[in-house]
Length: 201
Image (tube, rainbow, N blue to C red; front, side):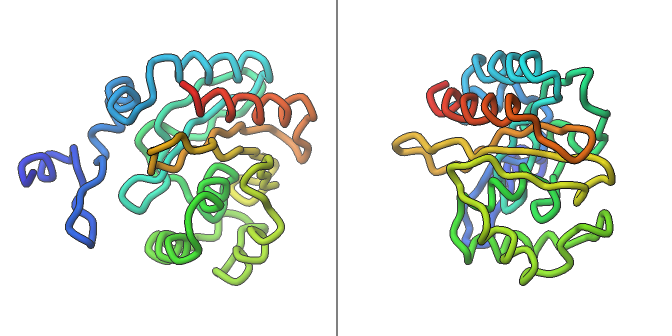
């Protein structure tokens, strides 16, 4: 295990257990299979991107961080260099991160956000844990979560928590990046449907 941790394939957690490391995220096909997400996951993301016209992202919590595991680009979305496979995503400023925060306990949420810090990306980014808590209190884990210009000016992101399968202790979410201020109704519907589909893939 020490060798795997040294190479970046696993990360040792504070309680002495291990979680998936960054190097596994760089090899996302293998990671999806090893984490119980089969190759069909990629097809579901591609379908979401094609159907909505917006880039689609799959994220999870790994070693106390929100990580983009896979994505499928689409012409309707601008390129966001921070939303790449294996990269940390700011949980407090993105819809993907907020959806994932809704899937964990309040204590886990506090630990994750405070450990990562609350960088201010735009004037709309939540500046402290109290402001973030107020936002999350207005959201539900079984609905589409949105953020408007909190991660990038003039970009709206929407995400949906993937329902957990029996025996699954990993929190997943799927999201879209959309230019402007509005999440089209069709995109909201597709996100909800795809989140349900990913629970069975």
